[in-house]
Amino acid sequence: MSHDSIDHFLSDLKSQGITLLADGDTLRVSAPKNSMTATIRQQVAERKNEVLAFLRQKNAATKILAPVADHSVQDAPLSYAQQRLKYLDQLSHASLAATSDEHSIEMWPCPGDYRIYDEILYQAMTQDQIRNDNYWQAIQHLVQDKVVVDIGTGQDVVMGRLCIQAGAKKVYAIEVSEEASNKAKLFMAELGLAERIVVLHGDALSVQLPELADVSVSELIGVIGSSEGVVPILNDGRRFLKPDGIVIPQQCVTKVAAVRLPEPFADQPRFSPMAYYYVEKIFQHIGYPFDLRLAIKNLPAEQIVSTEAVFEELNFQIQLEPEWQREITLTVTQAGRIDGLLLWLELSTMQGAMINSLTQAVSWLPVYFPVFQPSILVNPGDRIQFTNHTFFSANRINPDYSLKGAILQADGNRTPFEYRSCLYDRSFKQSLFYEKLFASKP
Ligand SMILES: C[S@@+](CC[C@H](N)C(=O)[O-])C[C@H]1O[C@@H](n2cnc3c(N)ncnc32)[C@H](O)[C@@H]1O
Image 1 (cartoon, protein in one colour):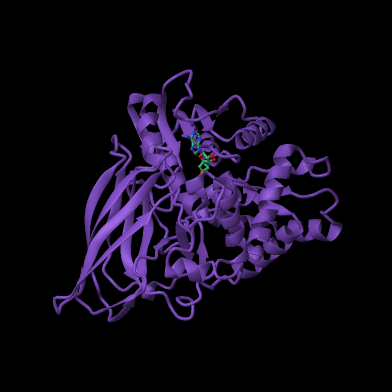
Image 2 (cartoon, protein in one colour; image 1 turned 120 degrees about the vertical axis):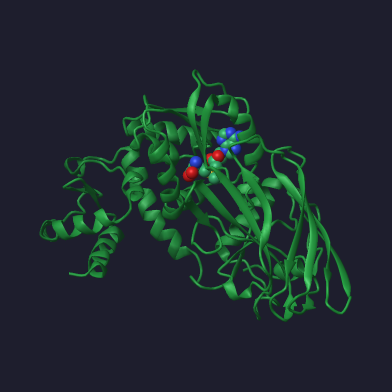
């Protein structure tokens, strides 16, 4: 029996809300009431060994993140924790189906920069296996028998639960959102983890812990590493740690390169309906429409038309400057148009465990800065030279970015440019690109 058909068998079950999990040599079943028909029970029993072998090959984090109820309780009413695990599982299918064509290019807003999280966004992170595997690699090496602080734990306490699975003694899980922290508390109580994972509602900048921690774990990384405010939060978060305390993740580098948008997307850039839902949510949250920061999904790699460079480098083992400047030079590699800059993450949870938001399908998308409007014709060898200035936005947590420089062409031509990506920008449809983007609703 090939893994494909087992995969298919498991997917079929999942579509009925039934999840199978390997727990050592035991195959555990999480299923809605009355869904385990006699036929399904028989099929599961017959294929138990195959399923176990298949599930064991899947990475450790998948198992850890889905602690399910014992088979024996499947006919009892579902507890909050069971409902939540089942919901997360079902949502992963529903939300994937709800997004538009898997391969079409789409613009997206950046909800995390505005602290907008909801079921779907939390679920995207909880189900982000690449992200969670990378965190798991660091966590399993570093937290055994340790006291951990999980800063920004979210409603599913993903990192906190991984820490307990890796043998942490105690986790203090801080969450600023009241709704998310209430859900997290309920979830931990139902899983019987409330003693070991203490959920604290509050802003990490003001919360006090009853003891010092050995390790800090957090995932406050924006689509540009610093854009969700990780720098001031983790700078302050050193006070939670013993002097030799360890910080996970280790570092985050944001890379940048010039890109050409493919036609006809360049002329008709679009949000998907799902992405537009979040655009409206951000407008509602801020109180007015504006030219918000953009991410781009499914841009083919061949649209990158320059060398890449480091845009930002955050080493979380030290206190970081929240405001800084960096000189950046890109060399054009392909003749033709350039439309903007693409920024992506290389996030290292520890030495040797890296997440890349350009090459891997993760819950962060690459950012698109529509810098060159109208677009500019360039040739290989031309240089794009600029300074990026990162500085606090009005809330003094999330940064703004200001780029100023020029394209230097071989014929001596110099085309200056400036671009600002500000959290609380007031301009709306103020450039050709945003005019086209907001020309009609998706
Ligand atoms: C990107 S989500 C990550 C959630 C979870 N840790 C995970 O990995 O799935 C960031 C979380 O941090 C929370 N957060 C952001 N700033 C915070 C702060 N200053 N204090 C506490 N929580 C914060 C947000 O509400 C959100 O739940």
